[in-house]
Image 1 (cartoon, rainbow, N blue to C red):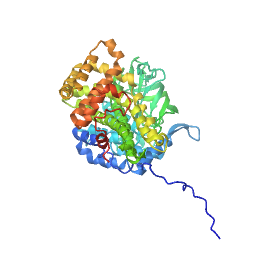
Image 2: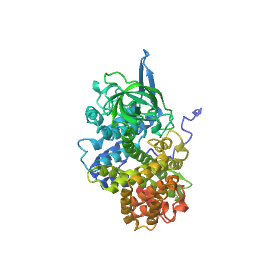
Image 3: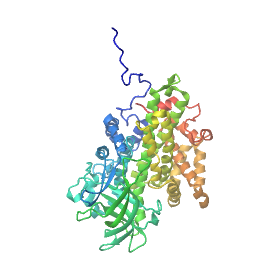
Length: 568
């Protein structure tokens, strides 16, 4: 008697093959030669071993899973407890707290301000490189450490207040407990509250009022009444907030803690959490101030300059965050292309796909060199003896880079997703999340037009420093035929009629960044990388390539550009 055949088991209809394996277990730092070289160049080679260790930790399967979990389980607002008392607690998935603990352990919220590093050359570059690595893992968790980092130089100017916060601000321990600092909380996060419904980036239209509860002025206690339309990381232990003091119609800056001095919850009521396109792991909210307690920071009526100092740091982090998304998407695209075959050959061996990957590699390396150079400029321009050129890098290039690099991340992540094909468009891989994250940095901390107009204002105020920077660039430009006319055209545009300049601000900012990136590549990248970038972004091939990635002329060695980009 014959044995009856059994039905096929689930999954036995076919073999699974020609799928790229998960990209895990590699050293994210050492596999990036542009980052390794830039770290040494900016004086932070002493941090390389730490970054290598961190780079390996971030690619372990259990750590990679944290990013997915934190984004699939978005934060939830609980406004009241079981008894009906107002609590405004934000509940996060445990993966979120593990991500913040990772960031904190590496000092990415405060490293240049720590006693061990504040006098050490390259501390800012060391911190920015580590931030860049974490940004390749998960973007939402970067927001609270960014704002905390940016708040420190502002709070340091208020010695009495800073003395009470210093240990918690600098602590490398993540303490998620929702309790007052006075009850033993070991660390703190600081957020920002600027935007109101009627104004957006135009914070001068804000209407929130602050009334003195005692002696008015700097360091005085106030009560705030009003709202904020975007209140970042509402679970933070304090926020820096703009409001109009009753004694003046000009905006002032206030330190608004989550808990009042008596230990009661401050009357900052969270109305709802924002339902955002991306950045799902991080909480953003709308709040109302119902006579909320606050302390004036800085001089009365000088709130905008005070908060702009904080924004300058957060804008740099926006550049780094976008560069990190580009790098993460590039590495995933190259890895996929090295393992996936189509039409009889590996994708990476097909000329047109190599062109796409090589073009993306150029863009990513240029962004990496740019933010690392800015990190150095932030450190040296603030130090004694900082040169006008360093000041120009910080003041002019930062807003231009924030405009251009963040814009390029949108197209970049979309192109990298296309390399993956349908697998890139589903939520089981990281590419869809990278794509959703890409727009946010163009919007936060000032949209594109705001950044471009800031470039023009910075040029007017720092004209001497700008020309010192351009003179330095000119020495490099002489060796590259396409670079000298590009630099000359940039200077002409910046010194054109003011009315013409404003209408052309986006074009000027774009040209400024491309020229800066070209100079950096000419100075520090292999000749083949620099030549390909300069020729296709500023030279004869610029008109042929357009805006679509993958249009590099055939005379460039596409395969070597791809091989350099990801050494793992």
